[in-house]
Amino acid sequence: MSNYSRREFLAFLGYTTTTLGAVSLVGCKKSVSTGLHKLKGLPAGISKDEVTLAEGFSYDVLIKYGDDINDHEKFGFNNDYIAILPKAHNRAVMWVNHEYPNPLFIHGNMDAKTKTKEQIDLEMKALGGSIVHLEKDKRGHWSIDTNHPDNYRVHAQTMIPLISERSIEGKMEVMGTHSNCAGGITPWGTVLTCEENYHDLYGERKKYNSKEIEYSKYDGGWTRFYNNPPEYYGWVVEIDTDKKTAKKLTALGRFAHEGATCINAKDGRTVVYLGDDKEDECIYKFISAQKGSLEKGTLYVADTENGKWIALDHTKNKELQKKFKNQTEVLTWARLSSKMVGATPQNRPEDIEINPANGDILVSLTNNKGKKDYHGSILRIREKGGDYLSTEFEAKTLITGGPETGFAAPDNLAFDNNGNLWIATDISGSSMNKDPYTFQGNNGLFVVPMMGENAGKAIQVASAPHDAEFTGPFFAPDGKTLFLSVQHPGENTKSIDKPTSHWPLGGKNTPQPAVIAITGPMLEAIAS
Image (cartoon, rainbow, N blue to C red; front, side, top):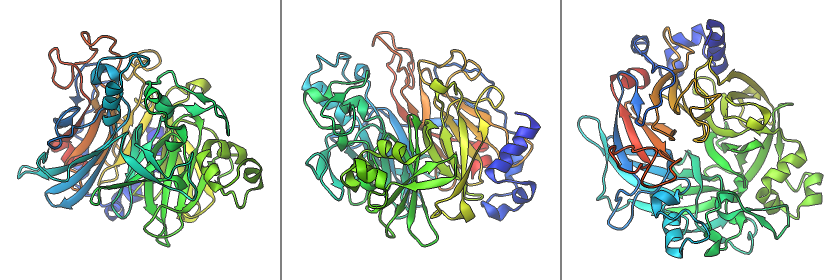
């Protein structure tokens, strides 16, 4: 990245020479810059079947697919978003999403037409989420407390109520949550887990009010035994890990939710930023109707060309009234509603994070190959007057992926305690190490320091195993541990006898998705 574009990147993130010296702005310590200048990134183009880390970082496998979490349940498959909820100085609860199944590694039968009910049950129970309790030893290392009585699973057969003004396809309680991608944490300490590519498992109606359902090429055959309608899925689900409750929040709309990033507005109500992870879909904002609850409120969609948040409100929009009978239908068909009101199609909106330095909203636009955007970008949304309740904003894209910046297909984002930006990439398994992505090699994790001689430069600190991506980066409160999912290693495997990855156990073992805990003196110098 050129010096000019690095300065531009820092300005884009809200950091200037003045603010970088204003340590109190983001809680930075001036000594951090001492460690940052020693940071040596990984060379470009790594393609190894292991988690490769830069000097000064190390990792432990915290938990992997199939591990026991109690005496009758196991950790699920394809872990994604991670949320850490501190309980004491050395205790925490960890929620982990489980996104989608790979039948080859779960039970061995890849033929959706011949799967037994028992095999589909195994897939369903491998998705959703895992709740496990963590404990930290005197050395500062975290581990799973497998004996904790409150470790439990939520999965695709768990009955979950719909929080809705009206029943949806005749139900107010539906079977399961699945396709759980990213998420968020509410100000009151519950977890938001987001149902993304639900159409891969239950299809989607060809059009509004149609009885005909179109199934994905990834269809797993679930509807042969569980003929649930698509409308039961594609929601944000709120999980209270203490009360062990779950509820689907229909007020936040139905689409391929990537995540749900919360912040309280000046009047105490909660605002949630949401992305629809599909090419040419949209960015959303939800404003709660009252403090401490997301059950009611207004869903807006972004017109980034004109800097307007447009309310998806049946009572006020005549175009929506012509098409839909009520607000429940508007929310159920949020994608159609958004197009009708003039929202701007985006290049796969994935994770959204809020910059602690200035409150800007950063949106990963991963890519859009149909529009020849192969490397993606990061979009900045700046609310008018810094007010999260505003219906006006400025949107600007200053950073794009590619050989110059060193990363492609930005997906999950995170800020550490010192305001450094961390970026995990999402190059698809079918495209990895092929043109135009050969410059990066496997998927990776990058940090953009905010201080020192490397300020504004994307530096790769980790490279993923074969076919895998890093997801769900989440820092422990003290910044000394980075929890990270290693998702779908070996996903291109065609034969169980010849897996394309053997991570994490190595040798001739089949691959297993897992959560790792990254530590080390360099991480501590940068992030704590």
